[in-house]
Length: 446
Image 1 (tube, rainbow, N blue to C red):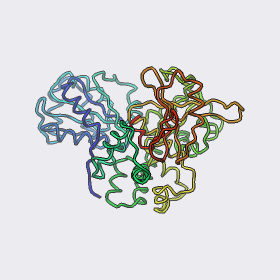
Image 2 (image 1 turned 30 degrees about the vertical axis):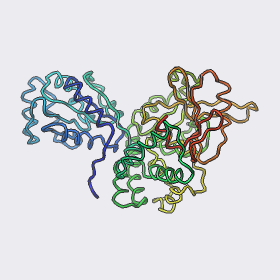
Image 3 (image 1 turned 180 degrees about the vertical axis):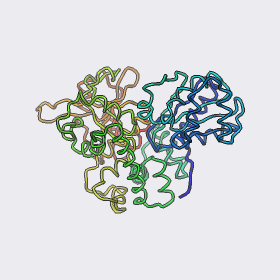
Image 4 (image 1 turned 135 degrees about the vertical axis):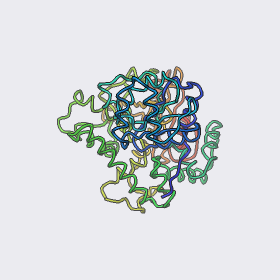
């Protein structure tokens, strides 16, 4: 398998940190496992510094870790690191990478002294949940700039496929509200569904580029899913977190107004699950969408903590998780998904990709439900965005179905709060009254 290094948008933010902070803070790159943190950090070090040392604390010798237990003489510490790794460091022209820093709490604590010393730059990588579990007895450095790396977004995926043009043109088309016509829309949606199936985990993208075989990609994704499941078992040996993780596709498929915790874990009480749920959110494997009881600007102020939905950070993983009833998901299923010909209702898959795209673009996730006039069903707004002093309700459809009853009812109820109203679906860009009906890939532009 070819060892590719993919272009990532976070690189520009890292460069901004280097130029603006000039060594006054360390850089902490956090994110779920296997999203490419270590690769990005090392690529940045290679390109932006004259030399670097990379310390992988999950593999390095115990004697290297022990060096950080004594900071009384930084000259000795830095001298020994150069000898251990056979690298010469140059003041203000070199960087030291603390990879998987959660595996050496003393090294993270040392950041304060090392940054103050000022000779070199420092980059840390790690998953937030692992970091939190290993810092109980150390002083957390305040001298950190924190950035989050997510799975590759749609534009990064197109870049990996050698396409530097499509997404930039899509953004221009969205701004101009320019329609594509049915034939081009079908082509663009097929390209987008390929991203949904492969996902944005660099290993999965690499496997696709090597094999052009979605079953091979599926095998890679299953390995990542099992890795995540193992991580959840570590933070919760009772297995509750793992069961909740595996149940996400089924829960969304039920079209319920919330994640039904009691249907996954017997006798589970919400208040006793709060710490576990926070750990799951901190893992950044799982995306939480919280119910906003009063959908208004300042959505976090109106959250119902007991009412939420769960999504996966990567829709490629989500699809594999949804079809994990077999050891391998056959290519025929992937091809039907790619062609939008699988008979199953895939609304929950489209909800997940919209959740992923909104979160990656920097939005927190909120939704809203309320009973219909008959009281037998609920209206539901899949996502809510706050823009200025107004809000934008979003509905998601898995087909070209044009009905938007919930959007209409919501906008009638809260007419003074609405900026734009969107229906994301699988047809060309159109307008139906006040509702902007747009292809689902435009979620990245909202």
